[in-house]
Each structure stands twice: as structure tokens, then as C-alpha cells.
Length: 136
Ligand code: HEC
Image (cartoon, rainbow, N blue to C red; front, side, top):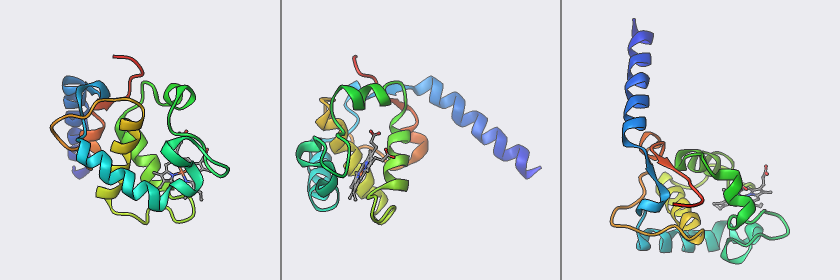
């Protein structure tokens, strides 16, 4: 019984995700949030991923063609999950969910996606509604 109810909730979530699908071109984070992400990036990520997300000796770039082709068509929830579960590589999951959301906002900003009025959520279901698209 309980399992059926859980399945039904997921079914509803899936429907609303389709109905409300948005893209990273619609301003899904704020400038302030990306700036906070930049600050955290400098402390936690830059030593491996390099300045301005450009890649370094111990981490791949998170801007540019290769990165975007890899993530094109996936959702911001996917990027958030990878970041939260596996990064920073030397201490995965060590940051708060708000910091991870800020970092994802900074990564999106670095890839040229526009800022908007509302901060990027840290709720996986909300993030699953936002598609990463290379071109608008
Ligand atoms: C100790 C080095 C190190 C640190 C610190 C680190 N990373 Fe990474 N990161 C890596 C490596 C290596 C990979 C590639 C892993 C792979 O391909 O399996 C990676 C991959 C990633 C990816 C996936 C990239 C892609 O091409 O899909 C993201 C996103 C990411 N890191 C974000 C971060 C963020 C955000 C931080 C800071 C909180 C961080 N990383 C800190 C080493 C690091």
C-alpha cells in the first residue's frame, strides 16, 4: 500500500516535471548566488579545477564545448547530484546543500547562461525541471 502511494507521488512528480520543464536559458539563478558560488569555488574547488572553471592538473574544465556536450540534455538536478555526491573529490558531500546550489549557479554562470530573479533551488525535484541546453 505504502509502496503504491510512493509510486503515485513519483508519477505526479514526473508529470509536473514534463508540464513545467524549463531551461537554463530562462534565468534560473541570481547574480548574487553565482558570486557566492565563486567564493566557495575559490576555497574548495579551484585547486583542482583551475581558475575560472578552466580546468587544472587534477580536475577537468567545467566550461566549454566538451563540458557542455556532456551535460546537454541532462537536468540541473543531475549536475547538482554529481557535484554533491562526488565533490570536492578529496571530501565528497562535505558542504551544505545551499553551497552546492551556489556552486552549480556559478558553473552555469561561467558557461554563459543568464542570471535571473530567483535563486536556484536546492530541492532535487525542482532542479529536475530545469534542462541544460547548449543553445536556446
Ligand atoms: C582533489 C581534486 C578535486 C577537487 C578539490 C574538486 N574536484 Fe571536481 N573533479 C575532480 C576530478 C578528478 C573530476 C573528474 C572525475 C571523473 O571524471 O570521474 C571532477 C569532476 C567534477 C565534475 C564533473 C565534471 C564533468 O565534466 O562532468 C564537477 C561538476 C565537479 N568536479 C565539481 C567540483 C566542485 C563544485 C568542486 C568544489 C566543491 C570540486 N569539483 C572539487 C577533482 C576535484
